[in-house]
Length: 443
Image (cartoon, rainbow, N blue to C red; front, side):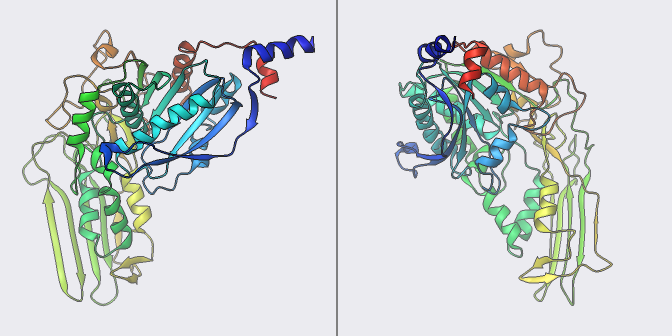
């Protein structure tokens, strides 16, 4: 009996076995536009080697470029939804992709991802097409890489593309957060770091509105020119509601109230607001003031009337206000002010914290057709009345949290959307193994 099973292993699997493979790095062989620096990615292979059924996971925008392969792997194995183990148990091999610089141009990292496709294929038995799952910005990089490979007449060896809450029509960073960063960047190192992130190529491409620099029009032009890949089944997941339910912040709220009284003449104040549902003349986005030995300087910026209300829109949400608080030590007694450590005294206040905001609107994650998010688009669109939601998107099938009455955190993996991913992977998988053979392979 053992010999029969062993023979089956040889014939069916090509002797693919569960092994520990050292992490490795791939540097792109192609430059974006022929001029930009070559991008690199770090890759972790988990599961059978050679890969019998390969699945690639592509990371999103890493704010501080600190998420390594361990962190990305942990994102796939939460107690709530262990996608990693579910795939391994079914004989799939995972290839986790970590960009060496996730803040680089999306097109540059896409060039590197094309090389990952080829490397993954070479590390497999070359029988089962690759499945690609891109989370957040990773979904945009994957779309570009797949479509560009087809445009170059290169075989990407993939037959499934899963876009996971990817900002196809752009992502939202509150205007007030951006104004805070701009106002305090020359007096605080953490604010200066945030400014550098906002000025990064990827952030300049992804955000619907970037008050520092924008390269989004060029990306939109190229994505429209390439379109979606044609040789893959394309599906999408949104963490946002489709019935128009907002995040729940409310109309035009004061997100952060901050007053710092330091020693002698040092002082600072800030007021951060979420954007209004309906523009009213005089609605403030940000107020800031700061006082040092040179005197007092203040600035007030109001919202303009030509943009939709993004901060409370239906969609996957993110905690930028909370990160700003934590990183800048607003509530701590060690806020650095023009190089000095300032202790907060009794007259200092920090109030009205709204930690989260809409980040990837639902209509962006699903890339709803004929809607421009920059021109007063109805972000609260009720799509439940549409008989076939997918037909209003470029995707063959879409997933939304129908089991919930609230929007979810951006990129959150749940048992329900995990099941959607598994169904799509199984649906596009051609290779099968008996439980007995699979059990031996995974030992």
